[in-house]
Length: 358
Image (cartoon, rainbow, N blue to C red; front, side, top):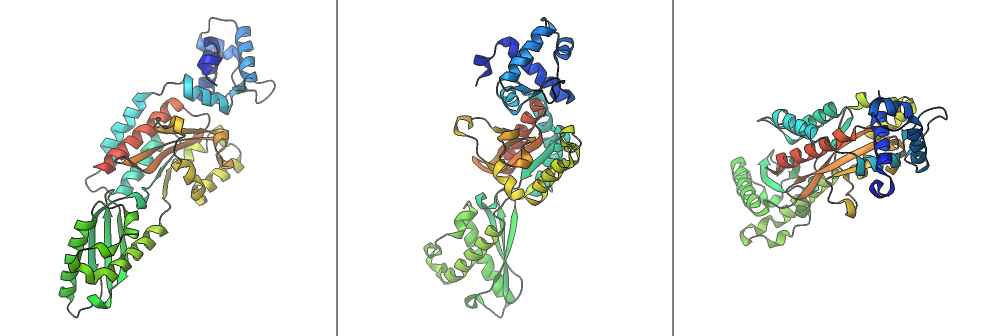
């Protein structure tokens, strides 16, 4: 249902004012309040009738028979999609802070994501979540084989998002030598060869690479490279589920929506012990008709998880080039300051995309 086609301008203005007042105060809204604070040029009775119609439409409801109205999830949806204008200034503000504070000369990817999550939580006042890049989508930037002992080699992989992974591998008999310098020299030659041949490969492709296709002079390493591929695969699969960085929980649970301890426990349990259930929500692609929008907004009962029903999730992918590798999100009550949170999420995602694509 489109508010533009279904509701008159008057009803749209009354719905918008009701939602904005409730977001600001967490108090049910009545006609007298709207008349006094929003300078409507109509009578209190006319506003009261409009509130009754908006309630019949399912956009507002009365939590108690003697109280004013508050928005339903559908009311918030209409507000977000058609009545609200994001405040781009707040997006510019977090963009400024991120460029100034998030990245240092000695930065690592995880420290950058941690700092971005902290800033997002601090500026929004809600729970900020950022997933670490999905390792399997990263591409190889550097590879090094290092002798660790007479029997073991360490494979070090650096991805284009500057994540580092290491894998321990047994030295095959074909490469065994009594001379440590000889092994180190051989491994350096092999590292140079592999680094040149595999740079830019997606890590997922390394698992199924046909090592028989390598140059003839390196065919004696075929068995070792197949073993290498298996070890890489096992290491990547063990961490195939992205980790989630979370900040800002303490602020959100002070909101009146979480006055009941049971709701707080359910949300904390989801964030701490059931991240595998939260991830599909954060990493879900937008519906085709909404794919042009960078930010995905899931409000209240639109969330499939019961622990998320009192909440809104706003999320956006950050990308490496054109490939989505992780997600930025905010979780807060449905009574959320959407004008601010939407540009905050979008600007953070844009900043991270820019930072890891350099």
